[in-house]
Length: 188
Length: 236
Image 1 (spheres, each protein chain N blue to C red):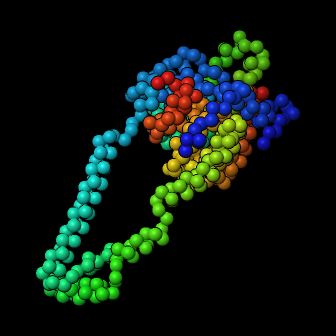
Image 2: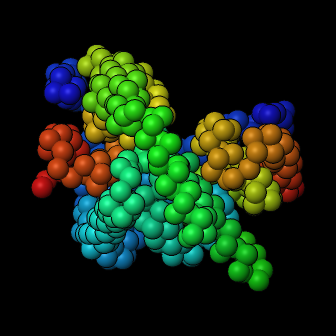
Image 3: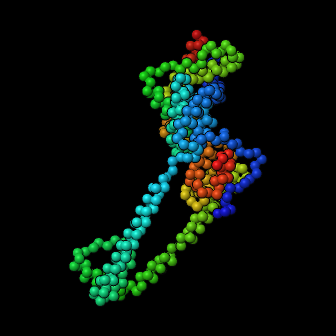
């Protein structure tokens, strides 16, 4: 068995190393995908004021289930699955949906035009996503924004692949309608 | 899906493309959340809950007790036959492993046993020889292990070669094939080591860290551990 030791191939360039490890690999992974996680929570409709608490809740779940994580699967899909469940439970608890004040309009004054446009687009996406029901929204975000394969999405959200495609089709229609409606309202 | 309107309505695909860019969150927020996360960790690195040694010892003790009990029963069984043969004067050969015997009533049993034993003594010349014969027909344990090892090697070798030529994606698929066929095979340790290296090579840092943590937990005495930790940039 000795000949099957790791080969010390001298690579031309070292493989990319993860960020300097801290206390636990789970925490390292959490830090690496921190921005993605917060954005995913926003896409799932979590108000900005609750994002911090929910991110912490996601970390706790991630830590508890770290053993179950299969490293052959994309980490983002796994993280999104946790974020989705945490966000859904959180939003269920709320008696009424408070519209998320995405970006203060005052901020726009000091931004160059292109950045303002980009921010507006991002705001429009979040607003339009709010119009799509939670389950379909998750499929849409994972497939069309995170560009994950449907098999992975189906596994993460515990559903059949065909159900996933069906939800995606509906979600796309709803999203397009929401974008059109929001745009027309703004134009008017 | 993407329909850009002539009135300047943004196309869906352009909206998604803009949304794909992840804007970094403010540092204060990051520090706050990561700080909370770190504070909620019960212990330090790699120190995840493991099987308690007490439980392992308990299992070992239970197994030892079961083996001792079986040996005791066998000895008692043997002794009862010897006692019977001394009492009746008929030479008795202890029966060879019978799967399941339903005991008849005691009085009948004794007579029946005497007859049966006498018949067996005549008809079966040497039960031990029969056992040896059947034992020869099966491959010996080391031979079977060597065979399994060779099969494992055939499956894992492509992974090793792929890592050597830095084709990490191919390596991962060969690793997955080995895991499917031999989840706890003799080369499991090498396989998991290769997995860490392949994941790192593909730039999948968090997954490599996780695979490294699992490796350390599963093979704490491995000779590969130092190399893997070095690859992951982990100080002992």
